[in-house]
Image 1 (cartoon, rainbow, N blue to C red):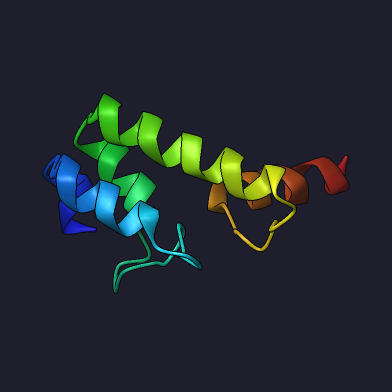
Image 2: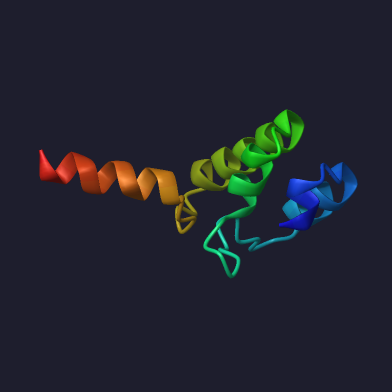
Amino acid sequence: HLACAESQIKVVEYFLSLEGVVLDSPDRWGATPMDDAKNSQNEQVILMMERKKNEILARGKARVRWKKIQELMVVDKKK
């Protein structure tokens, strides 16, 4: 979370290189690393996180829970 919030690119790269990395782990306030990057307007970190998400999804490991996607799915089901 802190690395994403503070644009610590090398630290983010390291964590994203780990097998089984959880991209949407909420902190004690419910924010995800992506939320932290977006709140800090860290475009490079946002792009890195998006690339990793797409890589995981492309490999069929769709266990990544993206809060925003889930919210959209819930809204879509209500229609």
